[in-house]
Length: 315
Image 1 (tube, rainbow, N blue to C red):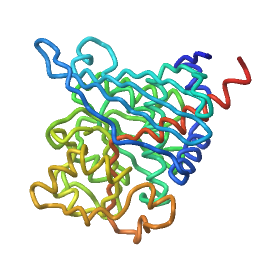
Image 2: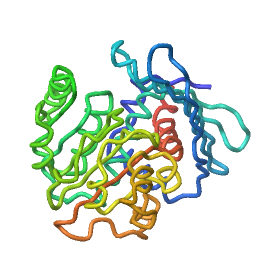
Image 3: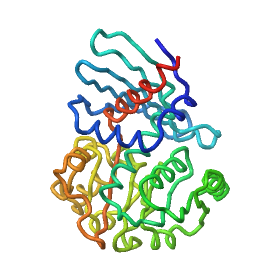
């Protein structure tokens, strides 16, 4: 069995190839059960979360990812999310690869947002606001920039120094990153707003969204979390990564339905529908769109297969 590091993953999963692999992944016959959540007590802190994410394609591969989310890690200077991935030959059950899956998870998550953006944001989208300063922030910016002609990328975070560090990292890669302390002003100008935080109360409000904008919600992966208010959902055409996951786990969706602001039938489509041409995506220049992702195991499998195909011959 071969072992691949996060550095290996970063080198093997460029945005165009990864986005194409995920687009194809949503159109093939892959089993992707809804993931179980387990709350892990952490003395003196908020509970951590353990996720188990299996997927398989008959005659190809089985994959399983374990994920831990420890909200208190930010104060320790550690990533909040850690993950591990095992790839297995589906013809004989033989493990073939073992991945440090933090980079795999972060890259596939950002690529899912970029994939959705190809259907939902305006093709001329030029201004991006990223809410959050964690591991995903620079990857979301880079992934969105790979599919839209972004000329300005603003970064907001509760810690201004961390926001500046992310902006500097973007500038070092040739993107126009700048830290902001005024998310309202930036959201009102943004063509795309991408949120990747552990917020439990809204950070983005519907009244801030301009006509034609696209809202990308990544961070709220449990029913008690949310990054946008109900008004953002009522103003937008709402799409999700998977209906099954979003209806059970996505805080904005679960809470929006509970409050009466949203109905299940208001969700226009998921990525199966968008990639398969069963949902229209953006229908007008002034339409406000929203995409909510909570993650699903089929995208991990698609990303792991691509990485393995590119890395295995070199080992």
